[in-house]
Image 1: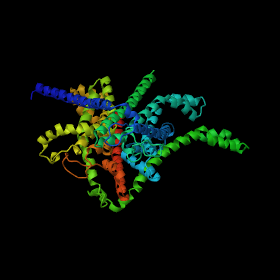
Image 2: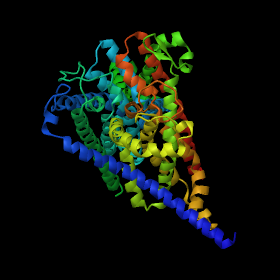
Image 3: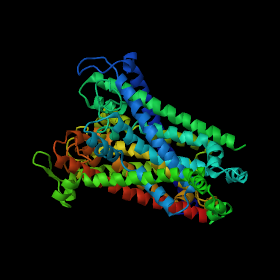
Length: 285
Length: 329
């Protein structure tokens, strides 16, 4: 092959391969657009007021809604936040501000390990720990399972954003004679506030769609679930049950529920990222 | 250390009548409390994780005692006679995950190369944002789309195509009903793409610019620079992203449960329905009628736990070693 021909081939390969990577990117990006678009069209079409206000109808009867599942999901997520965020936040403060010995290494390692535990295994844990002991499914068990899932991410995001706070702030506060805990509570943590809140929002958005940990902790319920001590419906589990049920009406409601759930998650997710982008931008001053 | 220095000016207080108050002040000083509280929270995380392992271990003892290691190597799963073997589920988990990687890795790494090496930063950031949103879509929604959109599409377009071109291989033989290893593998591939893209892009961006400049200065084309210099430099990090994705795929539950067919069998054909570890737990846990059955399902959970821990550990080692390499270069 002549030198010119070789060069041509090399340029051809160059364009071909680089083009392929571009095509791959387009495929992946259009997947998201497709998912969003499909849910938007199919979900919004099947959405009505009854979806938000009514209880499910028995199989075969058309109509009804998922009011109980919406409230159930809200309760479960509330419990999860109350359990997961404080533990994770304080653990993150430990790692960023106090942890520089072997113990911190172990904590960091185990937190990563916990983060990698499959959600279905978290479900088993919730079952053996709470459902077996209390002998029945409950909102509390579901909330604890999701709360456990929130801990590792809360730890990591808190640690990360505290570490991003310039050391000068800490030193300045300590130099004024402030005890370390007050320096943390009044200077360092407020400086990282936006980041930490963002982390919590992203965390919540992640567990809001979790289904597997709820299957045998909060289970499901066709009626309202009083308090936190009874089995309850939740949006993700209801979507799962409805999708596999032999009823077209339930399939339509599954799409509507999927739409509501995805919009909720994407709204939290995107606004969290916007807060973060804004505070990073502001921090650059 | 510094603690003694702080205490020493007040050491007279210890012998004075106000000694108890000084002692109380020391014990209840804000700093001690704060340190105590955060350390206790950190310890609580360790305790909860240990408790998780303990619960899985204890609550699977019936199955472990009865079947021993045979549990992992036998393929009969019969709740009626109380014989439980995990092989079909292990097989399904591995097959669907490998299929997901086969599809997802080239696509994901390709897109990561585009985003890191070619796309202008603004476009790259916008597209990465989109890809990361894909990771936020709940798995049950992937399942929903899998059942009602993807399976019909595979049945009308992909199945005839594969049947006609590759139908002679055992991988693509036999009838196709929709629910199958193939459907599960494709859904998983889509679900792991965001992880591969975003981690691979990060490690590619971490490759020092002088590596690229050197290759380009020697007359290499953009692609040659990327493929022969940049990618090898970031190789371990990319492997790391693949392992991370693999761990996700192994543990993924809902989407797989909805499209794999939930049939405990070992078939070479990807068109056949199967079962995975996570899917059988999700499906049968609340229906399990006796202790041995529940214990066997929990032992499956233990197996899944162990698998993902090992894979995750490998992934983290690989990603860490690349970032060190870039830092030292």
